Image: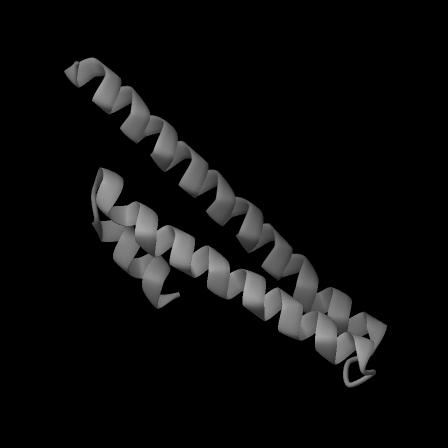
Length: 80
């Protein structure tokens, strides 16, 4: 959340490293959640209840990263 908060206040290319770092942390969280489920520390119902919102956040974060990269590419193309 902290990295996403920082990225929200940065402009253009500055936010990409923060977004990518946040994405890596969400991926790690999803993997750890999956491990808990696989070792039976988490039942199916709780695993689903936790993983679905995390998947949605991951999709939104991936979209934000893609859009930011696209906007930066367009801005650089206009400068040339």
